[in-house]
Length: 72
Image (tube, rainbow, N blue to C red; front, side):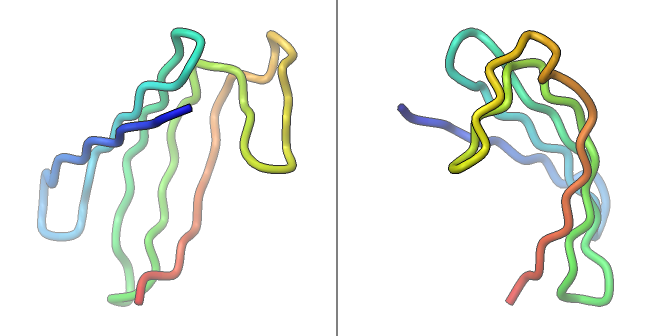
């Protein structure tokens, strides 16, 4: 399985991202870098969620998500 992620910077600390996902889905997200080290994002997952230990293959697993990531 492979995944490519594309990001577009729309302002100094704001990015838009998109990633195709296996089985014909996609994921889109808007994120902002805050405090110089914390990236906060929100988006929509158009495919079934399947990451690591979480394997939700229900048709209803699609939907909104939020993300917080420490950047160093």
